Length: 605
Image (cartoon, rainbow, N blue to C red; front, side, top):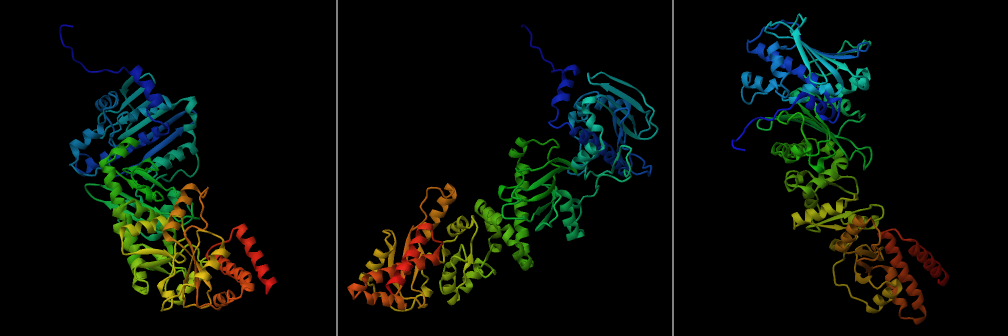
């Protein structure tokens, strides 16, 4: 080739129209969103021109109508916006993907203004051909130019002539195919309008010939557009129930009104779960200038707040936003960071100003707050002062409140995982006025381990993992090696250690303790292996024998008589089994051994 050749790629309508018809959108129902959005844009533009004195207001008000003619199999979207002239239809309709929205904004809007124009649809108008084999436009411009009638078939062949519309505005008429006749049904249209157009800024009326169609199907001023100071708690709750068909009030709500440069609004709710694992998956609906775009936008909400429900209206996002865009958008990252901040601020606000209410919802939000603290250092730093813990007596305290009160064991935070099973240990600590926290959820062990890594001055200790110093009497405890050997023999477990202590509570013959580190490791392994094949019993187990207990004295004195050694051994085993029962539930073999040992003791007495 001797000369360089340049040019532009052309697409013939007979080639592009089949693509539009089959693959323009994944859901055909979106065509109605696009056409109603166009109608809304036309009205928004008209209002803007009137405000700039570029047009005159006729005082008739604005509305959009979606009308069905079942006999003629037509679906018509009508608006009384600024309309189009023959030149504009030729420019914006006949030239595919040339949107008039951007041109209008550049001409009439200042940079940074929130015009409310949806726009930027590109091929959106032609989505009508996904359900229709013929589309007509009858439009009259606000400039009083002659009305124009445009029609086009599914092959992209159009005709344009003078129209017969007397008043400003546009009719878009779809001749629906037999295959898509479902889109002529009231229930189908109701569902689509409620999904995509429930909060559009212009009143929308559905007309199918049925009764009760004299009211708009949408709310033109949704709650998220209002000033939070103007909204009541009842309005927030009612809006939540309407959006998510939930009969329960949410635990709390957050009204977001972010200014430049983020420029997005919304309301987020924390739902009340009906049981521990319900409603783990939330739902956040994404809107673009009050037009529904998508729901379950995981890229906008951090994973540890996925239980949130609500709406976000983000005019800076494209209407037809993709997952890949959301995953790589810096704007989305900033929205996510702002949401985290607002959630943290709300938690702190509830804690500081509504402590009683906060304590009432804490059990429901605790797993998510704890998980968030582990996943996000900034979130932890923001809310750590508002993290509270329930005691075994159903009172709530912060970590600082706990340590300020429990000064006998400096730096130690005692907790129980089962207040019934570990009641003996709890009772002994209570005698010394030491509070015990209740940490009985799956996530608690990992959470307190994380807190200890963040704060080396605090150590969480399960109430059965060690004998607190406050429970011991002053003075040195003398080790009795012969008695220790008897207990080791009676227990019959090589890994179980035996040691002696002088406890203030003389009624307690012995206590079982478990290594905190070993038990946490075992809990973690049990969690990840689902409890299969990992030995939990006897891990880091220690029997602490109370030398001040009368029964222990009796067992020690019996060792002086060889004939009583077997009875002493039975009693030693009984002491061990009683201590074990106070620490955990016995398994089948242990229970059988306990019963047999008790019978043997009664026989020999």
